Length: 311
Image (cartoon, rainbow, N blue to C red; front, side, top):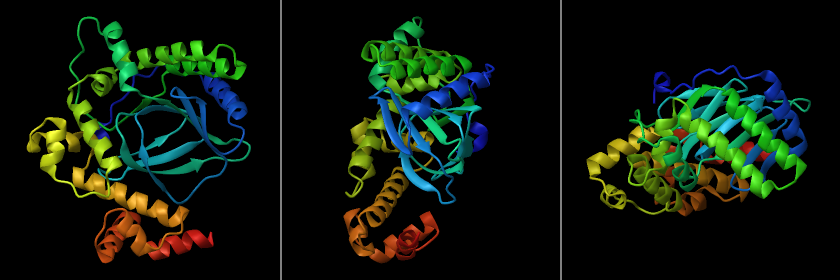
């Protein structure tokens, strides 16, 4: 995906005071480095107090991402799209796609924070009729990621949700309402018609999401394009076209990327040897696995794991 195709959110003059307030609240709610579910299914946050020169490879989840403090660089594993997430941006991931990221601004005094609001298709579906009572506008070309300027209204609504979480009073009742405001404002933004496609049953985005979920859960299994196309109710050619439009890669490239990322995780977290990791994620040939690993990560798997162990 070329960077020129990135959708832009209209600039609404986000007040730096709101972002500072968000960072202050997150400092209290996420007191150490790691991942926190501040409100299950509604508000998550990642905190890091140091930068990282090595990129982390993971599957992005459909979500709104706000970085009130610090910054990270992000690139899609395929497609050549790169961007930075910082206090001036609002980023929306519309599908589960492999990304590479590295924390570029963070310190003990001013840690990096990324606040994430998951995009749930059912929740969005409930709001569509309210936001678009006369019908959903025509959607632009599907994308895996939408990047734009931080939206002041979305930031303010998110701050109110964090304040409610901090107070720990009626959070189960009130926080969902505040997140609903965030979602409504997102749907009303220029990227709204595209985001709607996540929720509309039988839309191309919804169909491709089914295939992505299957590939993510069954990455080690052999796959035929005919079977995936049948799963989505599309012809093979239509399925391939829409899959690449949304993810910037073919279904087989997607499966390979997930396999390699999973193998890397197994070798690093569980100290699994190269041959075992290759077999575990679906490779029949260790030499093929090693070649593709080098192309993906720039270093042979044995050397990569050894480097990690010495750090």
